Amino acid sequence: MSTDGTTVDRPTKKKLSFPSAYTVLFCVAALVAMLTWFVDAGVYNKLSYEGDSFMITYADGQTETLPATQETLDSVGIKADLEKFVNGDIYKPVGIPNSYTTVDPNPQGIMDLFQAPIQGMYQSIDVVFFVLVIGGFIGIVNHSGAFGSGINRLSQVMTGREKWLIVIVTALIALGGTSFGMAEETIAFYPILVPIFIAAGYDAIVALAAIYLGSSIGTMCSTVNPFSTIIASNAAGINWTLGLGSRMALLIAGTIVCMVYIIRYAQKVKADPTQSLIYNQKKEIEERFLKNIDTNASATKLEKRHSIILTLFASTFFIMVYGVSSLGWWFEEMTTLFFVSAIIIALVDRIPEKEFVCEFIQGANDLLGVALIIAIARGVTVLMDGGMISDSILHASASMVEGMDKGLFIVVMMFLFAGVSFFVPSSSGLAVLSMPIMAPLADVVGIPRDNIVSSYQFGMGLMAFITPTGLVLASLAMVNVTFDKWLRFVMPLLGILVAMAAATLLISVYI
Image 1 (tube, rainbow, N blue to C red):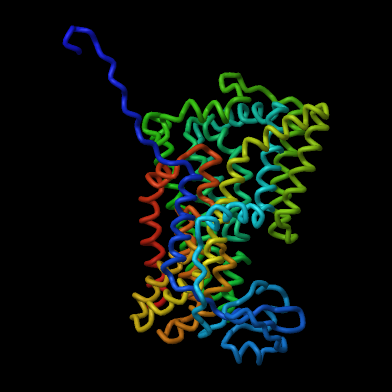
Image 2: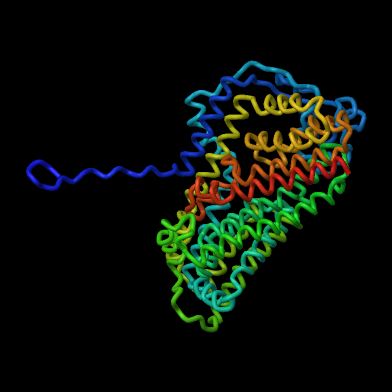
């Protein structure tokens, strides 16, 4: 109120909001670039299999070719069978124990920081194109109207039994994670499952949790996953079945805990939508995911055309899972599958050519942001490699646990692997780099080497729940959820899983 009695409008303060996934990743990249100025650069000598010989790459860049024999492996201290290299179980360069050498520093500057996402885009183009084609595929299915009709029908069938959606989705994706490392492939499921969960009365976090937590707990407790369990065991020089019992036990218990945790939150949101962590985004998210779905429409029997399209739709995902798990497929084959399926569905729905192109491009555009996040995340790895500090962090971690009691040792190892996986988010990459270095430490402490493999899996898996350099930010972008909201949701669960993983490791070393 002014002195003359008139009302004065005061400017309202803008409420600070959590930064976007792009900003979070760029800050992480800047932090990594800064570390390259303070952490000593260093590398381990690397051994790679070249068909009929081994090639050792030394710290100074020079190489040496040696016979591909078991004697060569024994001479450099790599306790792995030659057969594992020959049959392709170990296909990446392996770190040679006791070969760490400091090298001239190569700190990453401003230009490196801004070039890293561009290089990350080049290095992750297979994943990026996979995501874009999935977007186009989903766009075509949405345009046909079959997806909306299917969701309405499913919502009617599942009335009163919605929580079984959570149980089924979490269990199936955990099964994919533990068996063949289902991770990036889950990106394909968000556009399908988020509308189903929202139509069932839940929020987007419930769908996100069922998919992402299922994948994370599955890969954390991998049983026959060739990209973590088998390659890590081979690099450690042991049979992959060793330690399988403890990992299986934690898989079952951890999956049940995740299901119960999600269901409790989901029921709370269903009873009172204001309890949702993303209630202020409710309208925005529903407009995005239910724009082609009339949730008020009465569910009737599906049209024959829609039934055929939904059958083709579901078959695409079954074929993808079978191809990856049994036929050795990777992103090129998966991308081709979704592209061909989009064309077949368009033919069934008799979508004109120009309309097909328009809808496919629009669908790809909807996931362009996710593709960019994947590229920026890969850029962090580019900075690590450029600054040559990944091996230095691993070397420091190995030095830290020397002389510890075996119980403390194995728990600290889990946390060390969690920390290293922040910088080396690739499960197979971390396995071949770290196992030859870390596994021999078990011999010194007096515990079986399979405990090191388990601590690697648990530590890496636990970090995957929250690490910005992994898949979490891309998954969050799929459902328009910010990183801070995810942390508020997942941190209590993460604390429970940390305690369960530590207890499993302690039991395995003392019993």
